[in-house]
Length: 216
Image (cartoon, rainbow, N blue to C red; front, side, top):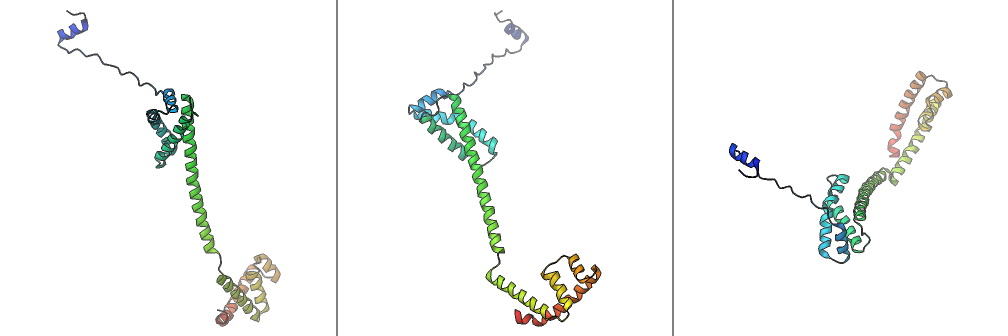
């Protein structure tokens, strides 16, 4: 019989004894203070250690903010360059300040990237609107043609023999007076105005067909 009763009991029962399980010690947090001190002294290995220690948590922060964005890798690299430069110059000494400076730099660079994308989209939209507006602007030929049509319309109206037809068409279509005002001016109800406009348009179109070739 051995000093371990459980082992003897397991042996008697034919059950193999369980070996003790080794528990891994928790990973020690990065020694940011030591890294920063060594970086300030010009230790290149410390710079590599600092970059490796910050890379993964920084990547997680950027992914949470930007999602699966292709800019994450570039922003991570840019942030690490800024942080490393600050560590070399001694602008970041304390570990707490290092973490805060890294997160703030990442946030600022991400905001700048988002603003840049927004400005690019806004500029593209503005350029598109400018092109549409330019396309809709009348050319010199358009202005001349419109003026010629107006002159032709006035000439056809002036040639109409029926004075009321001419005045009704001019008031309704050229001056664009409200229907109620036209009715009151010519003492017409809505049905009568519709009939007058219909007959006047027919007479106008007949004259227009006869004179169109002269003005086009």
